[in-house]
Picture 1 (cartoon, rainbow, N blue to C red):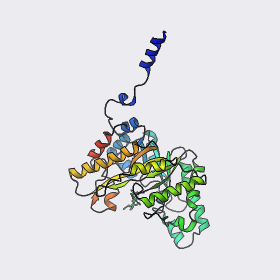
Picture 2: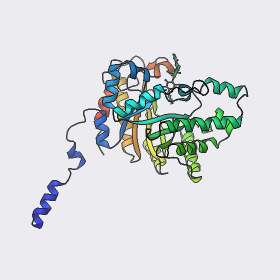
Picture 3: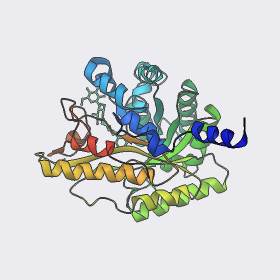
Picture 4: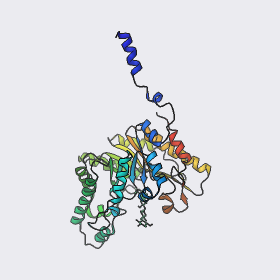
Length: 346
Ligand code: G3I
């Protein structure tokens, strides 16, 4: 072939630039995520996954990443000492495999939703510090090993910093001292060396004392050679508060430390009743959150904390508030859903 014809052939054969390759708007969140090169996920209510065909259909159509809302928490997987109940967590992982979804493990170390045998044992002194440390190590090892190779990212430690920037006085800090965080990451890494290991928290989108303390925890762990790979911003927002306008910069500060970034639990609640104006504001918050994530190269995952108002933790925790999700109770997409679909590359 002559050089000119060869050059022409090469130009014609070259892939189109991203914009031109996707001339039409994405048909759903899965396609949107694919176009942007990230994963869009949702927390999953296992009871609904089992019982509701329409819930399953929307979940598996829209989302390429999933997190168990409760099924992987300690009280769920070991309600009695030594009695493991993996059925719900297994069901989530299996559903994910069949539907090409990656999984976020949530969560290995937390102060909430601990089994009663553990908290009462610590309170009444039948479980001392040495035993508690062994219990934590065994828990992390057992759970991370069980799902080895099936979990893309683990929330290793969840909510370890208070809003005022002090360390949370959980049973872990009180009885094991601050070294429990480094230990937890090391144990998780040993059990599943390929999983990305995250520190995860709420209000980290805007709260300066919490941000600074969390940054120093990360630097400190890195200085000790502890395997920490990611920062999770839960993102529980409400339209009655301003959108956290500095969020992308905060993400960048963690990315600058070499961490992967994820939005792990996004929802945007409102005072009820719902009005078209409130839904429009909510849509804007969702749009801005995705835009912020996409503006930071290290942001790889954008997960919502439930996708339907039919199953959301919000009304139970914030009386008078709700409607925080992308789909309504009947699984009709809300303006927030369409706002996400409209987010353009770049
Ligand atoms: O397991 C019992 C069940 O046996 C009983 O029938 C039922 C009746 O109320 O309660 C069940 O427990 C509930 C549990 O969810 C499982 O559904 C608890 O009462 C309820 O408090 C618990 O709430 C969860 C909450 O974490 C607990 O801290 C929410 O569903 C869950 O969305 C929420 O998730 C957290 C993340 O893990 C961490 N970040 C914040 C986020 C929102 O709080």
